[in-house]
Image (cartoon, rainbow, N blue to C red; front, top):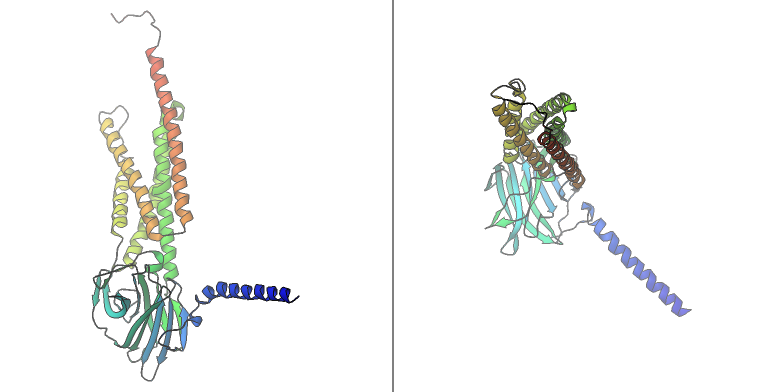
Length: 387
């Protein structure tokens, strides 16, 4: 009996130990469960919505001092974390940042002014900063500081960020995925509340609309129109239906693509200080080539015209160029938006299906063409003479 009780106690202890093991990681994901080696305490804390980051702060309205502790997980073990205030706008540009990283094996914090996405200068901030320090544990980095806020400040725009590497004591560029671009918000010093940036959700929605429009137009409709033109015209019974289908498909792709291009221009104007250069240049090239292609409908000579041969070369060359550039830019856009993996996989499946259809139609087309040639070469001699 005593042995049974002893075994039951063992099972109970093991169960409790397992429960603590399972619960501990969950608790560490909440700012209220965090503590610091320097034993500092703060009145408020918040789980920031992106990049697995946390902010602890105390604001003394009498001295206008804001004491903060920012906790983040760098993108790589030798990376960095940053917390910034922006007194002149929303977002990274014009922000005044504190960046923590390891230097010679020890944690350090340095002030930086972010004049643009490509101009990150180490220099003192316009707000007074004191009590700078940093620590690292459990894969997380923690930076501490006290900022002297300007008179009359009731709320500040904050920006936080994480990076993967530091080169020669200088933090390298962070990633430009959706989470990195939207890691900003407002810190209300009076109420002790922090919120996501106004318009953040709207910006993401615009990017999604831009991506969907361009994926449907350049990435799907235009390839379908090319397939129709290349293979349906082989069959005499499909003439002229194939032409109207082809023209309708490409015109629809162009209209939707122009809408997508317009949303891209709007997003570019709102993304001050940084541009996705390759994606933008591909988009401009697509718009110009597709516009030229649309005008080809009005300049199309008749089949027996002496310039029809040259027009065909021009039309086909531009068409295939738009096809290739369109698919390339869709993938470039997917890399920028960084949606759930299923969306990229879905687009790859769509391309694969279109590719299989094109291969089957290519084989059928060659069979039809070869049979026609064979039929002409074996036509019986009718006894007539050209003499």
